[in-house]
Length: 77
Image 1 (tube, rainbow, N blue to C red):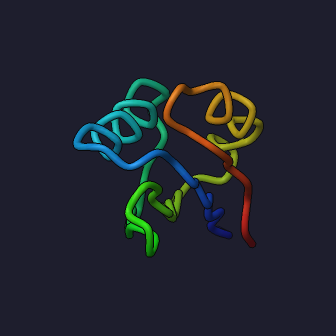
Image 2 (image 1 turned 60 degrees about the vertical axis):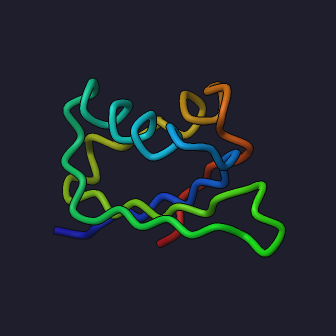
């Protein structure tokens, strides 16, 4: 099975990772790996999320982009 990787750029604060984890949990999306790092200025985070079931992540980018803390989200193959 092919894996889909989401790249998410978000505002950096204490609850960002929890908010993203809750997003995937509520939608029953199997996350294989999630990693986040801060940018140089410390105001943004770049998270990569590897999902193990590609069918479950179809068309979730618009939902991620509508989240308050998310600046940008897109798929990376």
